[in-house]
Length: 261
Image 1 (cartoon, rainbow, N blue to C red):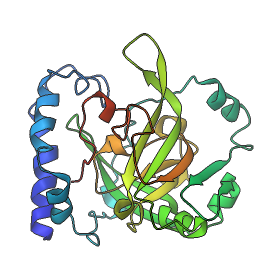
Image 2 (cartoon, helix red, strand yellow):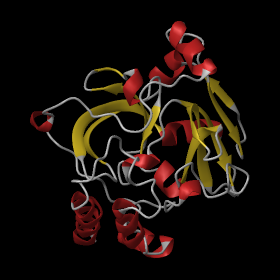
Image 3 (tube, one colour):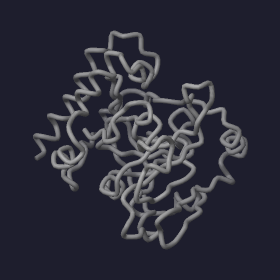
């Protein structure tokens, strides 16, 4: 099973390198072009069904972790690097002192947690590789609270199937307006031991460019699944009530929902 995992990771990350000569300025720029080279590679890579991909990625398999000696550069940001949304700027001005993470939806106990409360929960530190659809990768150390700890505290209801992340950054909707970024994963990934809500990067507080105050790390998926600037987590049994119903901002723009590697 591990051999299959490695082969899929190498295909997804290695195949996109062939498009690296394109003039890419951000993790998503060229991939967002529906007829572009990167987009075509993604469609081929993601042609496997969700069920088949889940068979390739067993529920207990771990993404590779590395020694500190492999951290050779700062973590390259992906996506938005400096949100200008009014609510986010208000939090930045107060150094996130009044920030609350809301956990809602199909739970027995709704949560509203400050950053101090989140930092006081059990933590996990892991050195992993971020793989971007653009073809680049970067190894960094991430520290945060396992998402499973929050789900346990919230007591997830049996009918829940997905975790939806609401974010404090916005993207263009293609019609001249802006829509809040959102993303989602299934409960198998949400409860995976390496899925954390990261507030630390390489031994320091998470920088704004990398998603402060909180971002999710889903180490067995591609970078666009790792939502930044998280403000809320909703447990749900369906995804059609969010955005255009495809499970994430980039999925609403043609990306595959499951990006396991």
